[in-house]
Image (cartoon, rainbow, N blue to C red; front, side):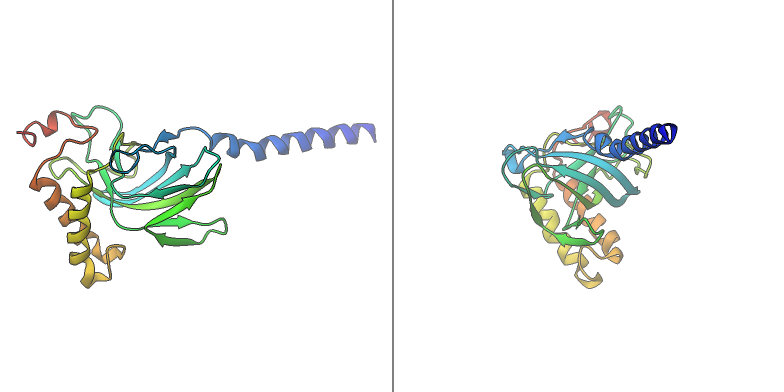
Length: 208
């Protein structure tokens, strides 16, 4: 009986360690999330997975480390490929409502949400390439959260034109609208080049 109790205690401890590992792993890899239009934000974000090519969906976790509820909006958020900017594929910019995932696995489309004190929210953002002269990324491309956000004026122009172009396809969140939305992103981005985090030699001609 004594041997059985020792074995049981050992197995229980081993199971406890396995259960704890995901929680420990989930606390790493967070970057500071830039606030909207020059404002600071206490929120942190980490990238979980990108699924797509020229456009797609990026799943992230947004963490509120403070003791007060904090507002989150994806407007202007973009992602920069890691590695040298001189050879990197296109950066990705968030467009349209994001899908907020609940604890039971359901998701809801939202323009903004409130993250409770100490909580971490998982969400999926529809993203589009913002550098038409670069190669397309893939689901294996590694990204980081940009240090700033796309300027408000450019965000408004992209949103307005994307909504108009996507209206006949069921709106900007409809899968059938992705091609139309991508065209509007590139059009407005190229109209007047604005330097963003992750610029390299690839943008030399654009900046003139």
